[in-house]
Image (cartoon, rainbow, N blue to C red):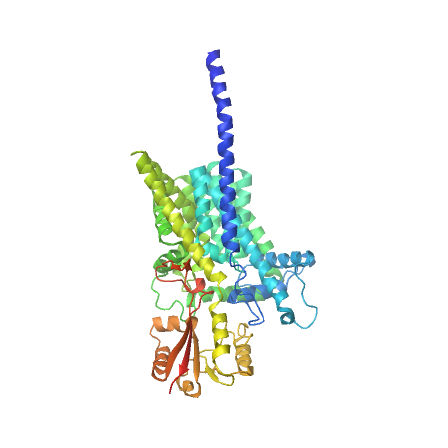
Length: 561
């Protein structure tokens, strides 16, 4: 007996160096994945920043969020951003990042003359907020690793992290001064502690899950639905329904939410105005953008997720979700509860931006990795060669997705189509010529005036009249004014203006293009598509609305008659 115990100790001692080496190898793999995630998110992160050509970001929401961030100063006790369409937490993060940049001497705001007097310094404010998204986007990749490891093991965790690092829509939105990536980070953390509750159920896990759910809601209101995951984890673990630990979840979440969005107390009227506006907005739609797009449940799958993930990973994540529903392990049920509830909410809405699916990505990445592990192990039972085929198929899916994300990054690294169009206009259209725009110019319009990105349409209209080098023809009272084309020698259109109108066969747009075909000819098309090394990456039905901010198609027509 003594000899046997001695032999077992020798075996354990011999395995320790192997385990240590394996742990170091996985740590190295995770570090490489995080570096890859950072590279993909930093590549092209300077896209569309304010410049002498255009004074506002080409991302329309960034201008709103930055203005809110500049109204607060958490270090000075100023917490009212005056804007509550989103939670306030990311706004505070952006404000703190700006203050940090100023403290380090990286940002120097002009003391007089307005923000546009030193446009380079103004653009740094946007970069400060974007760096928050980059940092938390990369951090989400690590949390996804921890979540995948807890549910499916270390190898699946590494695969989940790699999937999350490569997902095109997450790579793209991690470049933006916007709330979605930060909300996804807190959702992933709450899901991680929900998985821990399903296994261990410590007090600290309940508190942490509630805190991160509250932080998610304080960033983006509907992200608070993630609290369903730890609640489901508690219930499927066989613990008492009436439990002090379970009550901790909503209490912790509510306290943190109120701390992260104190406007409920300090500016309740503005908070209710903006909050109810968002509720009505998602119910009534977003102009022509989502009109005629059918069921939101189908649309998000066939457009948002297909374009946001790519076909291979969408298939893997779908299979992984079905497998999780069949297996119904405790941690899987916790994640499924959030996945189903949140998808119902966004699928039922009339506004269907692709970014709404970002909160689902940690779950889908983990389920895709879990299915890959299950599939490879199942194939390996049939023989080593079959197992290798499974690994090869996963590698192909990841290589395609990496190429897709790189192609997206290439769009952000190129000269923007609006800048290309503006340069062409300056070089080819004689000064004093009349140029017709079908709608009041905005972020999607070539910056013939640097003020076209202003938030107020009346301001943009006035600035269009003040352009001196050209005679801009803009009818704020009658968009798509076909008669006004007779007064102009040129016409400029953006795909953000015409794409959805043509899709739904809007008569005004059809008449306008009919007049263009009759009296004008297309002389310039500025277009940018996902491609790398000159090879175009196929994207199903094309990039959705909010994945196209960096690539509007610009058409320039010249009058022939």
